[in-house]
Image (cartoon, rainbow, N blue to C red; front, side, top):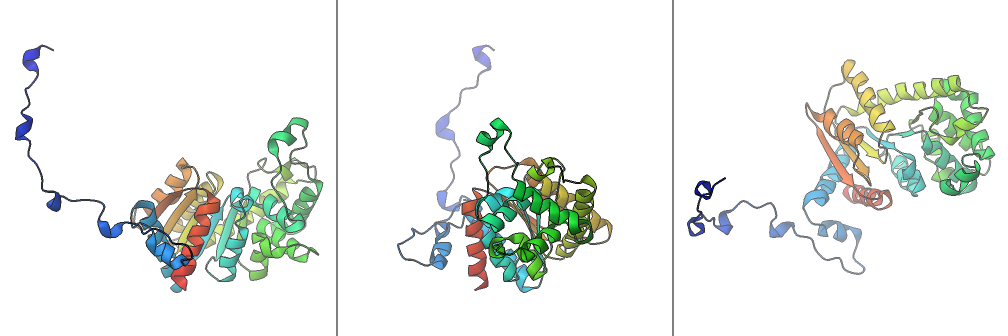
Length: 315
């Protein structure tokens, strides 16, 4: 391009705007307040900036509180890391309080929930154990989980069969078990298994027909949960990037096909933003109305913050 085609700009003729009249996204009244030693959670909560994710978190908490007071269903879908990062007692607390009305999880939640209830520890060192093939070879874990599922899984569902077995097990710490509390409180705790993804599937007593029948029963029960929450309820996806977002989408399609087409609220919490939760939980369900949120951060920080906010809102 030759120089004659380059315009000469006269910067002193720029059209300037007045700052006071310019639209702005952040106002001084939305700024955060510094926390102080000894202050209450309520003071800390009020001191969060009313901006972006903090604003969304407050809004979600308000939606959950509104749904709970109105008697709407609040359901949670979880991945195994939620249990591994020590959050089962928080879920149990909200289950006992009637805030959480249903829990659904992938197959890995069974491993960590059962091991914590049976022996008070879980989460083996995969890197070290994989070298000699000892990864996933816990006999007690497999015996308990597969024994319970083989005994009554196809009749009562995968999640309930494990919950009932933990309740009957002498010495099991049912207070930290989402599965056991589901049985004790008669709250649906459904488990959605992909064969080959969980360590117990490696063991000889694993029966594909039994696992399939048990998890299919749980899927149909989960479809009923989702149908119920479409009437102004809330669905929270905690730390499941594939199984639960896919399962939720299919359950929602079943519900809508059968006439349950109301609006509701969803939210995804994970430490990495994934495609399926964003599409299947946050976006697609609300193309005709409703509201979806997305939060990014470590489970062991974000979920306690959410639970504390819910408690404050319901106080």
